[in-house]
Length: 388
Image (tube, rainbow, N blue to C red; front, side, top):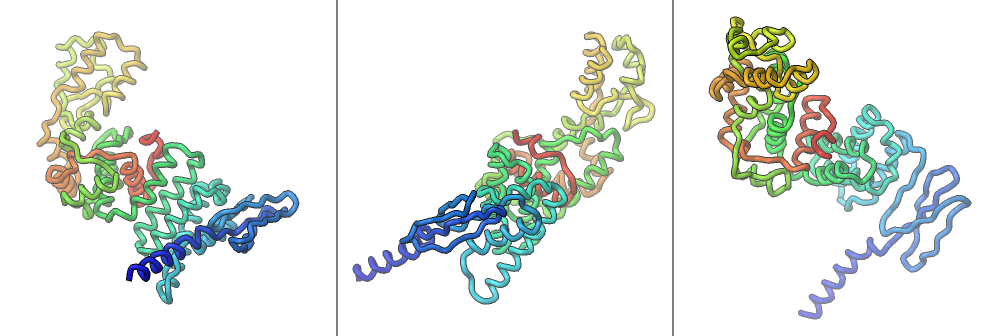
């Protein structure tokens, strides 16, 4: 029995190593197109035409210069066919159809967003990333996952050099298939609300539209499951910290100018602001037309305005005090958001009654959330803003 078992093990090892020991030399012709020549493992002689380069590897290599849409598509499909394990019957047909489907979607998006990316089709690192997309979509056929992987791959073509962003995107391509739509929704909302700021929100109308575009698409998918957050942590998307931050506090810090109740104009005089009721600094309150407030959404905006207007140091300190004066309480912030957009009640509940308030995203979590927001909400700021 032991001899038989040993033979079976050696047989399995031989079958496993066979593809790794095989090779196919590549000959590049003067036209720049490559052709893959079959060769046995016993004969390692290679030849190349004039000006050509012969390469050798355990699997297929595609080297093509001057790539266009059709060339890139052919290389992409060759990559899949050369690497994906053999399936039988209808399963093989379905896997191939799915791979072609996601490849076509990628090429169309690449043509629209970054046509210069076609030139990287012969890069081994890119081909590996492409194969990851094809393989995962071929296995699941999930259209949402396919769209997310396509967005990540297109983003990767924008970073051809091996830098931090490219490394994060490569890892994100491998991590995305491990997550559910609900988990992706969770990290998308956490990323958007805690890690981003829209500096163009000057009133509640623009704030509401911002929520509609970037938060509402995920509300119905949110999950409060502790196990779900533990899986996100296991997958390398983030960590559950000891400290927490309430969503009301996130809004107060991020959009302070929206969540103040205003103050009486006489307050400017009583505090000794020498500028008086300067319209460059003070505007009518968003929450009480009988009062005024400092004209700034964030402390950073306020500091930039004070510097631009060359305001004196004493006046700066007094205006900063007025900016923070009479701020809304957490309950008032929550009520105002829910009044503005009723679906925000679900978001506050999700945040308060789950690990969202404790969850800190990693670079991979940020990249996945960023791509998921782009997929459902449209254009978004460059990923390199957060990963650098």
